[in-house]
Length: 258
Ligand code: SF4
Image 1 (cartoon, rainbow, N blue to C red):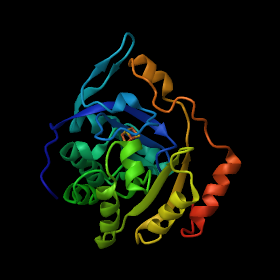
Image 2: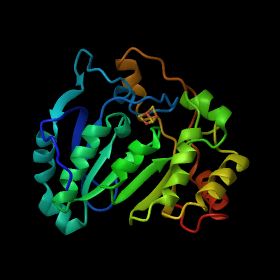
Image 3: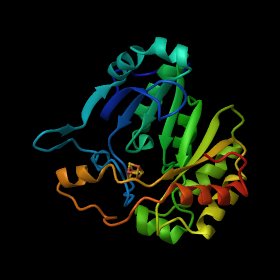
Image 4: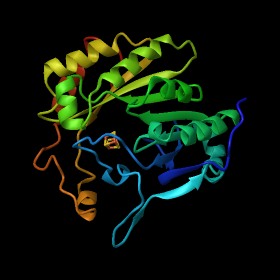
């Protein structure tokens, strides 16, 4: 096993226990703070800056060591065992703090705690590869297929994300890949976009399933608290019927779409 610094510090936004939305079973989710992307629909704007932020009522962000995080994670090890749950690392972008992320995941892995990550894959391949060694399930966002639209709405090119997803085909280790697409009306809900995403996913050998996430406006109040404007003001969530139609498009290429 690789040597590990349990005193390594990372910038943590918060830790949530007993989540049922971030992987199998009951999970403890460690949200890191800091993200290089700027999705216009981001529901956690407080996770974007790498610095601690303060409003009148709340402080967003705290430095924690690997040891401190693992102490929190171990509190629910019995629930993990019963529910087939475990640890999920989320963000912000976990790959923007690769050493810390790797150290926490490797620590959990060495204790036989199931591990999942939620990430955009927006990082060099070497970083992605080194983290995936300790991951059972990777939830990766493929937000927009068109490079131009990705730049406009996410703030960066998607070339590195697509390449990293393709490079997972070279990995022989056993891990599950889940590709998630948040469906944003007027941005990526066209047949062409969803077909491109489905076709691309069909070539990923580790793909377990694809997920389409319905756009929501839950984070908008936090923009106001942080004194920022919400970029997608006026955009309404798609209906459930529309979501079913989007799912049918992706299903032309991927067997299991949730
Ligand atoms: S990648 Fe996630 S955390 Fe980063 S801006 Fe987009 S939605 Fe927000």
